[in-house]
Image 1 (cartoon, helix red, strand yellow):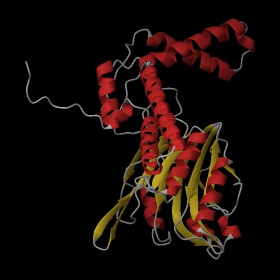
Image 2 (cartoon, helix red, strand yellow):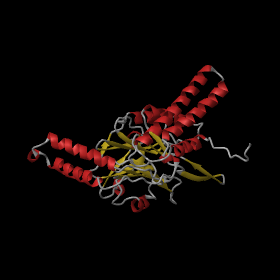
Image 3 (cartoon, helix red, strand yellow):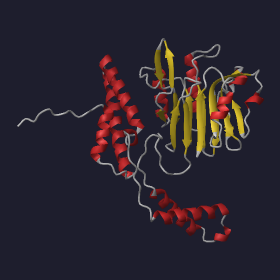
Image 4 (cartoon, one colour):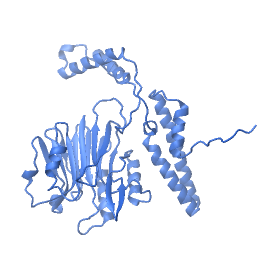
Length: 374
């Protein structure tokens, strides 16, 4: 398991460094991203260093004279990759075939650039990641997921869809008082093409941003995207696959004396898993929310369909109607795929339960019958 933490410390790190070391650095921490650190090239880096961790600063320290994003990564565990454009606040780490990137896009732009050019440059940077492999992008893009009218949100969804990525809504991640009123927004997000992780958030007294914790699992057991709820899982599935792989391994490598120690270790573990799985029944955990049943892509397609319908009603032209119909068909197709996937995983839920969750998500609630007519 790889434990990743992302925190927007707000207004500089210098007065909060001891808090970061005490609260976030532990034997379980593998990667810690901290944004809005406001470190200039005049700083002495030695006081930032932590034993057992490599210190990485965004390349803007060289190009702009200031770094707003830093990372503490456990030594000898991750490889730092160079960004495509050194003007972006991004740090890219690689562990095996997994890419973990921390990003930050502030409201304040550097000299001779606009908010628009800053956004385009950052999206281009993310497009140069190895998106064909397993990717985790965590950070503050300053895009409020609750603002359906945001142009940046629409472009973020279009970009993520084009690369088969999911934008994970972590809920409220920023709270601040504005003119005596509490303002809440969803600014910190996770973008990934994997389901091998759990996430959680919590606030502290030193920042208006929540701390985002990401746990990346390195086994093949399916897990939910939220640590607050669980899905039912067939625990024998991976053991069966391991057992079949073991039989194939023995058939292709009859001379065990010539095998490597690593292969022998895998064979022993796979054989034990295959054997013990015969005595263990499939476990089904309780489904606690519709997120466990319904693909997160359905929510995105539903929002897109609603948006295109409003455009069609407003513009009243044929092309808008075609776009709306296509979005409607995509939504129906995704619902069918989701149901087929749940049946394939043998989650054991009834068809009535599934369609009840779908209807609630779509806003189609059943009407209460007040009286019977004979």
